Image (cartoon, rainbow, N blue to C red; front, side, top):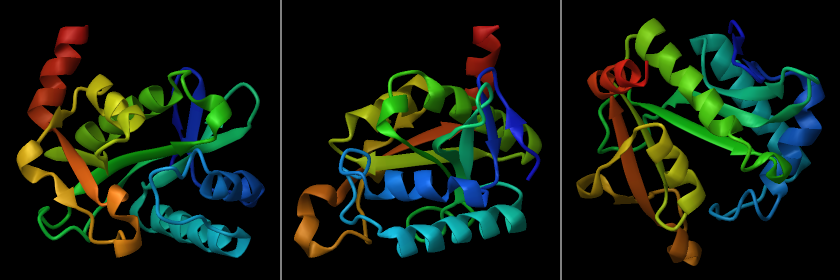
Length: 190
């Protein structure tokens, strides 16, 4: 993956020096509030390796977000293929994020996600990018709305990966952004 630079961030593939932060965000109660699991260190390391390999293979994915000024990894933001949801077309691309809590509310996710939308629509030629979150996850849906994504209530779904023991986390809302809507929004912002 060629790193993507924004005003304050570098979006890049994972490095071994990121393992501590990656474990921290995957085991933190606040970060994982809308997930039915927490990862221990071995599980976090395995997941980071999986994400790194996917980026090596595809050239994009849930990539490390690093502060350009300090080189400090703060979490991840990226796009990835989402082939495990049967109601989305094959090859659907999702945008997602997860940051350490001390970096919330500073605009980093929106800044990085906007760069990924440019990459997805201009470089990859995507027709659409989707995102989804637990229905009550207002922090994430607010980011989706800031990005110009549009809620698609007819496509809201019960996530197949959520166990019966966590029914409050099952219902997910789906947001979409078409290439045409993104272009129109981008032109209007200029």
